[in-house]
Length: 144
Image (tube, rainbow, N blue to C red; front, side, top):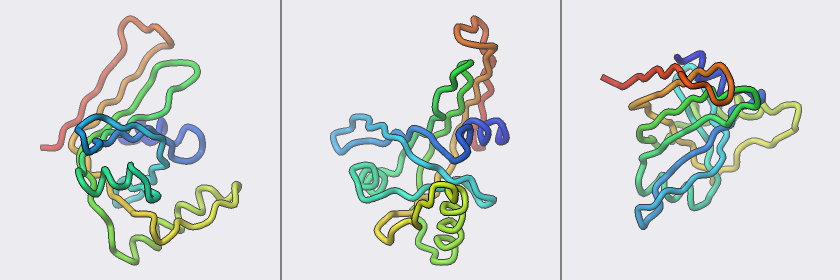
């Protein structure tokens, strides 16, 4: 499931997904984000924004892969985030962020960009034979 999830999150060459957070009024908020999959886990730099404030206030999240043009395969995970303040880990992930985007000359994440680790509580992988597949295959993983 991990490799299938990685393939869907990195289908465009860099990590791209929709991040769902919880607004102060309890409603959902969904925005695109660039997750980084690293040997230690799943991470993302989040710019100062309502999304960053949501995660600092209420660490629950949902992450969903972008749609594919030829099928309805999808990867979803949810859990809580952990704010990463380790300087060495931030350096390593900043290097990975820039390396993955080297063709685009994207700068390093700014100091005010918060680094969050996405702790996994559950994952769902869906495989289909194309759009409108009447019998999609769903595989679920739950922590514990």
